[in-house]
Image (cartoon, rainbow, N blue to C red):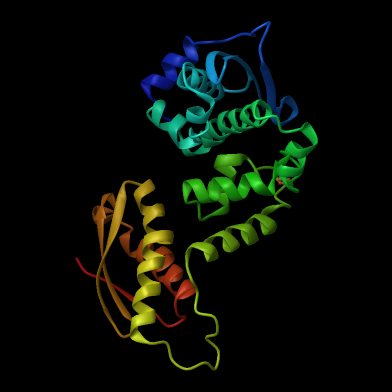
Length: 280
Ligand code: FES
């Protein structure tokens, strides 16, 4: 059973700004009823200020709460201010969403992005070109959207991408492509060594730099999302000493986290024979 915050329950039962704006300056639709979630966003502008925002949505309670939150957040803001709102801000406004419902916040951000493009005068054709190739046919999820949620939310697994976009959540035939995209995005945040096979040994300085980058950009975001953290204690050759913090420090499966997340990612991004040692 999913846990919902009081704010989500409140906005689900009494959503704000439901309905249409008859003389709206901008109307956009995202999602599709066939896929289970759809949102139509109406905006009224006065100069560059959003003076009214309403929505109609088809979907679960989280979709209604996320859409309601979005309209509350953008009313009274300038277009420029609204353009800085991300799905993370919507989740924060709601006090959190279950992992499996993160896609509702992404749908809100998608609608806002689309509306802002229209306000800025982008043609519809340009808008579609910008959406990129469709990766998940079942849910109509584009490559650009998948890359964006990975980057903005530090996602590292297919399951997380499915939670945030639904992609991969039906037939599963798009999963290999999602895995490729995740690898490409992770590779961008960590400067991998160019050639490890037959190359001269990695210097200690380079190894330290890669270990630090991998912990900071790949491992910590995953642990922080679960209420934990990790601290790099020392590096001695290929032995990396780390300590788990927060929830992870007391977790009964901390040894699994060490092996399956910390060591695996360091071996993937730094060197194949890195050994991770937990300091209690
Ligand atoms: S194509 Fe993505 S789940 Fe079917």
